[in-house]
Amino acid sequence: MTQPHARTASAAMGADRDVLQRLLDRAVGEGGVPGIVIEVRDDRGRWFGAAGVADTDTGRARTPQERFRIGSTTKTFVATVILQLVAERRLSLDETVEEWLPGRVRGHGHRGGRISIRRLLNHTSGICSYTEDPEMVNRYEKHTPELLVDIAMAHPPAFEPGAAWGYSNTNYILAGMIVERVTGQALADQIARRITRPLGLDGTYLPSGADPTIQGPHPRHYTKLMNPAPDAVIHDATELDSSMFWAAGGMISTIGDLHRFFGALLGGRLLPSAQQEEMFTTVPTENWIPDTTYGLGISSVTLSCGATVWGMGGAIFGSWSYTYGTRDGEHLVVIDVNGDWADGPWDDPVGIFTDLLHAEFCSPKTTP
Image (cartoon, rainbow, N blue to C red; front, side, top):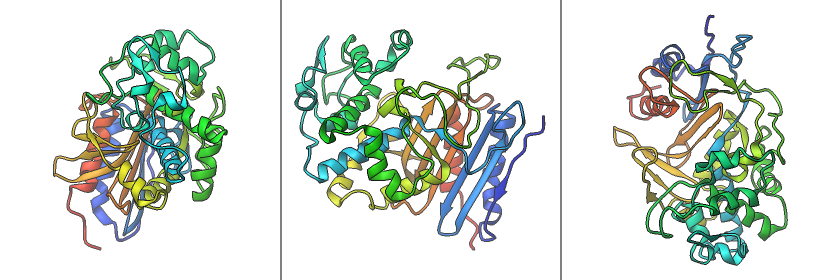
């Protein structure tokens, strides 16, 4: 099958974006990903590139308008809502989980009274991630936030609060529950009222309940179910019960919406300066993506050339995405792969994303 690709570019961008297109083509040809899209925005304008397909049966090309699951980039939206509530003095980052969710974090060494909201958001709580127990998660047809936390509570914490760093999806399930407790409204409604509607993010939403569909135009989402074998069976995961990820990774968005959201967030247009400083106060990560630090729902990646970019990535069955850029949000890159593997020279899509970030932020650019 021919692998179609599409590009749009301003005349000023010139040949330096050709290296990005070659990497996209390699990701499909050598990495075996179904399809990949990228959009770059900077002071020279907008550049969109794509390779591969949105649907392996029809050969339909990927487009800028598509909606896709953004996985853990959901955490950045949730952290932004929490910090807006902090700015409104409706809660404090130093208040504990026990104060807002009495009795919820308890058992097997977990003590909610020792875990602040800040420790939830920067992953220093030590709380076990419920996704570390897929057998228990998959045992249920319906997934409430309370159930997901209970699954985590059946396991001991990874470390004492504040003693280390450990990525835990349970942290953000609890953060979402706190938003609902503070506001008396659904998390999805708070995200819409505070972020997506004011910014005009028409393709971005948190699905309600166990809705498995993606509303609007979208690529098929393909997964190998984390099987690293090159000949692993590929499954279609487009329809997915997102309730098992909810505040930790359940949202859907588009390339353009992620540009607008992160541009506004990094540019200081969503949070007052005090909460902006809290969000970007980072701690070193452990056993995560190399050369990263983590703040409150946001991360930094230091590239091999020394450049540091800010944003967040998301991985979920059938869709891996990255949004990173300069600290002021003026130069941003959004990437999505509608598959969750990468063969050839890469271990996973993160390797492809890192190469694309390096090409964009480390290579000399053509002068307009």
